Length: 120
Image (cartoon, rainbow, N blue to C red; front, side):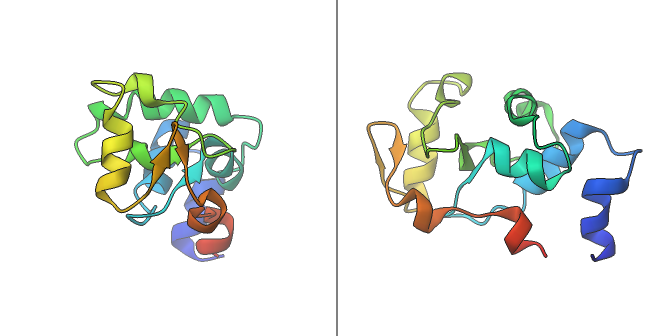
């Protein structure tokens, strides 16, 4: 494990929310991941809901956190109500070329970015 990746799992000086923000910032434009995938990657596989809470507070960060790229395990835009207006999450995803139909990411499996696999 590289030094930069090791911090996500072992650095007790980095709080949970900061780890969530660090991983979320690594999601490439045009890709999505899930709350659970982030939780598992940072060593807290049962904390998907807490990842959601962290992302709800991400607007307070100085550096942009692309929270719109994080959806539920089925590709649904369950966090859309936490944006300035309910359609903003969809609009941001569509601006990156992601097709969203009925609040669901089309081709979710194809677009899914798994930090455990991508950040080896």
